[in-house]
Image: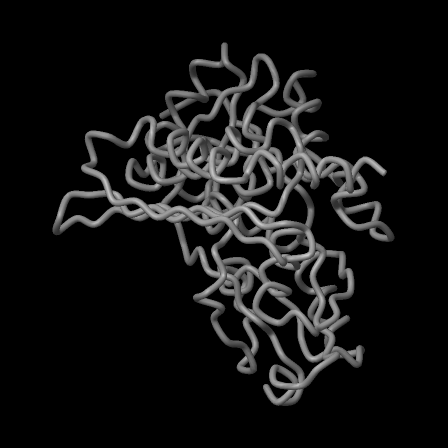
Length: 309
């Protein structure tokens, strides 16, 4: 039916390959020919430093961006939460697939007794997860943990930690979610967590037309709001920021919650809004402005100072 083969770029972890194969199957079902090209990113290779020390923005996407600009791949599939809010020149968002779970989960070793103990230790390398956890459990300690999801699960098993925090969607997608796991429904997830995005060269109209057929409009709108909130707050700085937007079909409204925390979790600024769907385009921006006006500017300045030391 279609002559051109669409080359799908992806990281080479099990989860990333699962995501690429999901996109491949959907394109194949539409009659397109595809080929998966896997590469290692700096975020997969450098495992001895926390992500924020590597300059987290784009650490998992940069290698694929370069491959696309050089013409080695036609599209790239990413976990959307890993993608910078501003894409490189010449690369555009082609589709957002229907979102899976946006929640974080705690994978624990033995039981949950450690939650009520002082000086318990859990693991995460996410500034947002660390700050959120410390806000709720200020006496706990948090260790850094890096690697793909399989590696991190093994590190939990081999450690003396109480547990570690993961994105539920990642573990569910490759069917390795342990029985000993609880949903952290109190923790506001990363913007766009649980969603997959496909990016393309801006001038590759063939690939853009193909992947546009995979787009899920409700997920696209909700992740746009969350990433707009992130971009307005962030100003190019990594920070403990969470955001979740959901579409309420019955009421035809968007429910949004956004949060900014200090790195130590002691300060927490939160905003919650419900608006008509027709007002979605500036929702993330206005919520971020409300946070900034209510102390967020000071918190962001302190975060930048600490991270730049």
